[in-house]
Length: 296
Image (cartoon, rainbow, N blue to C red; front, side, top):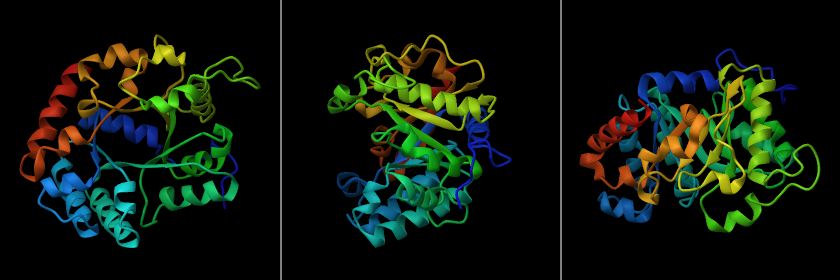
């Protein structure tokens, strides 16, 4: 049964766990993206077995070096049911290693359908259980009420797509809202404002459990997003893809995200994974040091 209030949170929130990871392990989040070409470079078959071996090797290299992982579910899903079995084993390894896992699933739907997605990924004991998932608000942030409620009830998190780096998104994300509470804001602004309001209503202090996705290769001012100030109560965390291979420079983190920088998750995949199975641990350690130097 779905909880009736976003305030019916578990005793330890996702935001609190994320803040602890920031302190203990820093802001780097390593992606697990078993592309066909990466599997080949790693000497692995382009199969579910290859994706499993790849994912479990990344978990082993990340354990004790970073605090977060972000598996891209699509690269497992392409192998069908065997791909999901492989993913479940990777997630089990990550849980055993005490790593915070953000599943990049980009789910979004209505009513009981989106509730079922949240049940699958956010319910404790599920074989697909993770700490947070990415979701998209194309049908309105309100369409995600059930995932917000389920996440809060189980101490989990959500990251709502707000401003993404693909050019096809600009026409939608930079459009202005015509009606309702956020009239006049860009769609990206409205998503951020809605998520921030949910964090405030949850009673969170410090770091909220609900975040947004803001690409690291963007000029956020073009989306109407002001990074010079944040709400006084709970900082909205930011999942920031685009550093490394996609061209985002970690030295620009503060200038890109401003007052949100303290809650930024620096997500990197190919720039680390392309180091290969022998050198990936060293690559992770190097990026942890580089990100930590920028964060201070």
